[in-house]
Image (cartoon, rainbow over all chains, first blue to last red; front, side, top):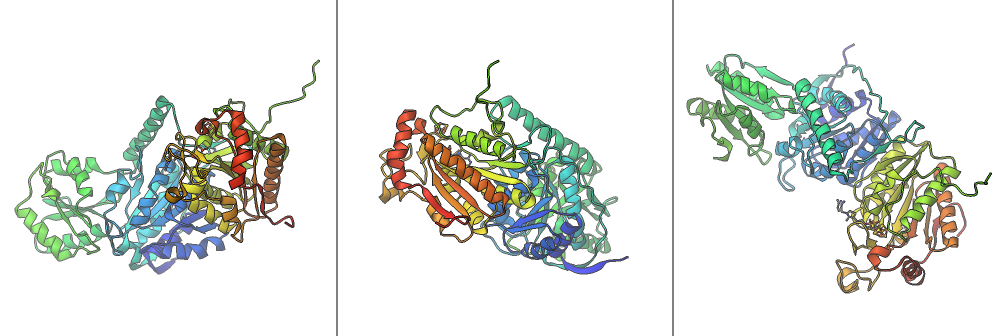
Length: 361
Length: 249
Ligand SMILES: Cc1ncc(C[n+]2csc(CCOP(=O)(O)OP(=O)(O)O)c2C)c(N)n1
Ligand code: SF4
């Protein structure tokens, strides 16, 4: 039976959470993600699950840590400044190898910034954000349908890798309405023999990230990185749109990618050979695919609502084999199709050239 | 055959404490272990340990344990209890952990009336990091970040957590104790037992503020430190029951 609904992205996240059989949500209000705690404050208790409005984002992420440590499916959501406050907790969760999900409905920064959409948290999200050598597995929705579908997927990844997963959205995804299909989700909840759940077992469980012996801590770091390597081999996801014969490939994620798709359609009508590489997993990052495309002679234009963050990863991926240009808007300004198309035309005529850090010029 | 008259509690793992001689953290650990064993709770308890000298508590207490980040023990305990309402959940914190960096978390756990047991070790100093001033440092007491003694004009006054939390509506049981004598040890043990029982009965937030020694950072011998608690510390932090929903005060 079709279950079609017109929903805001933030509300779709909540339905996704319920479909994923989330046990507990902990969050603190911040625009533009407020519908998430608002809806879950009703949906979760109705289902006999846990909802707590925490006293801060710091408390919220540590509640997620507590729930996850006892073997429960726990999540939090926030927006950029609030996510900054969660970083210490995320580092603990990653080090303790706990599954958990964070939704970041990014707003424009830095500082208190603005409440409109931004993509300025890419570095913070994919490079670690908190202290130490860990990574968040990061997935980027570009539609309200994705907002629903990605929550169960995020938990699947989180449990498979015993690692926190970030759904890196933005204010447009959170606030726009689209008709979506609320699919039934086949939820497989993993066994958690490591959980400190207070149940009788052969050996008492300890959830801990303190290792005072250097060799032991180094081993922990190696274990985490071995895990990221496996994730890189298995989980990379992207979509290619009119890339095959393109001379210039736009690279983008989330809202920027959605806009770039229209740029490609319009550009193609005008005879431009442009395509789009829409990134779905940001960590792990599809560097091999980008290298393959650059070896096939394609140049790149990275498009972000930032001053140039993901472009650094694209730049590293091409290994100097093609040019990587950049176009970005910030402050909550949403990219327009025409401004990107104008810039793409300029770049086609006059690319910055290999080994040039175009976003710094 | 010789008769066994004393045995180590099953509530503690067979592991040597790392605490300094004369440090009361170890006494409180033992009391928690004994009470958990006596109440038959070892296989249905989740303990949360802090960042501070008690950070290795997970190596000692023989229950499932979670090591929280500095100050966030009450947030972790909140989630652990709400997700596992049929388990006993206790949290253990020092005074830097609870009264400084984690002030918001403990106040809100108390305000929400989280049904968990909070054991608060007030030794008036930051033990683990080498003797810096704590929010609980006494007026005139020297610390490495107030070398001439705590000056109320510069550093403000000591924070009285048991009193502060008692003005909230939700806490069910709050008591301040000092295990500095056999009688004090017995009282502390009885209070831990009472708090755990209140939790099992679903009564809500319980906090025990336990005055402890830190001979190392106080620059005292263990005996001097015990006397110091009895003669000096108790003047700022009077013992007593501040809230007890189960008894008429
Ligand atoms: C976020 C953070 N800030 C600071 C520290 C450093 N630190 C470790 S223990 C501690 C103080 C502990 O003092 P207290 O809570 O009084 O416990 P005690 O050691 O006296 O038992 C501090 C500041 C830390 N580990 N994490
Ligand atoms: S430094 Fe103080 S609190 Fe820490 S173990 Fe030694 S005596 Fe105890």
